[in-house]
Amino acid sequence: MQILDETVKTLVTDRLRKIEEQLEGDVAFFYGDITEAVIRVFRDFMERMAARPAMKNRLIFFLNTPGGSAEAAEKMVEIIRHHFDEVFFVVPDFAYSAGTILCMSGDRIYMDYSSSLGPIDPQVWNGKEWVPALGYLDKVEGLLQKAVAGQLTNAEFLILQNQDLALLSRYEQARDLTVTLLKKWLVEYKFRDWTKHATDPTKKGNPVTSEEKQERAEQIARMLGDNKRWHSHNRMIGPDTLTQELKLQINDYSGDDVLRPLVRSYNDLLTDYIARNGWVFFMHNRDFF
Image (cartoon, rainbow, N blue to C red):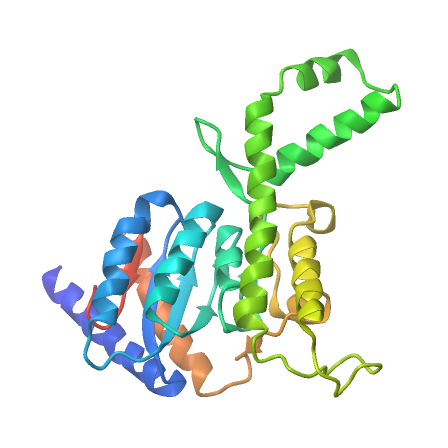
């Protein structure tokens, strides 16, 4: 097993270095849930990267995650941005929920046709398990609308009566936090080089105002958080939908015959190795395995 570990380590590090050369930055790989429990080890991981004498100011952040806590995502962004001026997120497979929120803090988001982000339905710990907040809020809203219309059944009345108001408040706060974070990060990072209109024929070539950036960021945040649009917490949103419907710029490497095989060979080898060992959390950079 030790020989296998060393072989995998050598292979993935070699592939990592090729990606670093191609994208001119330092690569970090993250696999697992985004929760408060990983913050300390993530902090140490990033500090070790930043301590290297040859450190670059650009981070190439590979992200594979089913999601987690918006608060944890916010702290991870603070840690990342403390050390790096520019951040490129690479999503070879999927980055859902809090992972999507995290990606919105990047200067670029790299995906191919098979990659997926997800609705920004924040997950909240209810004392027993992580639950998608927007699903609960939508259901309660529906019951309240039926109550106003006088159409609430006795069974539905009991469901509504037994709701924990403090927990519902937490769900509302989580929802509002995701919108706030996306608006802030999109304007501050993703849109900072967006200086002229390029797609709107009525504005093409005109300077982009701060107010227009704020408006576009809020539209993206609201659309990604619209359960009625996506119908599922686990909806897989590909780069075509992100660019065509949400008007979010994605660096699609599907047709890049150099970058695509580099990304897949690095990511696929690591994720296969993680699955073989049954790990739920894993990070990698050139000095950390």
